[in-house]
Length: 147
Image (cartoon, rainbow, N blue to C red; front, side, top):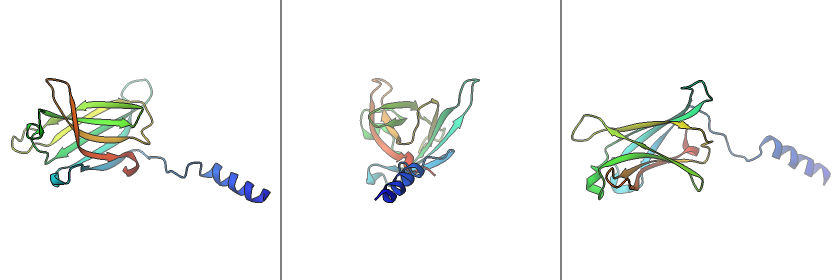
C-alpha cells in the first residue's frame, strides 16, 4: 500500500494536472458559432511581446473573413475582438475592415494582456459603436486548441 501511495504521489508531482501548458507563440482557427455562416472563418495569433522596459505582455491579433455586414445581423455597425477567462476577466478590442468594400477582412490586436490565458477563449463579436453594446459571438476558439 505504501508503494502505491509513493507511486501515486510521484506521478502527481511529475504531471500535476495532466494538462499541457500552452506554448507561445501559438495560433488557432476561429470557427463560426452559427453553422449557417459556414464561409465565415478567422485566425488568432497569440504570443508574448515586450514593448516597454517593463515585463512582457501577451498580444492577441485576429484576422476574420467572409463575415456578413454587421447591420445584417441586427443593430450593429462593427466587429470587435473579445478574449476572456470565464468568470474572471475579459478584454475587448476593435477590429477594422480593410479597404475592400464588398467583403472586407476584419483585423485587430491587443498587446496589453498580463493574465495567464491557459483557460481563455477568443471570439469575434458584433458591436455597436453608438451604444457601446457588445453583441453575440460570430467566431470562436479556445486556448486549449492553440497550436
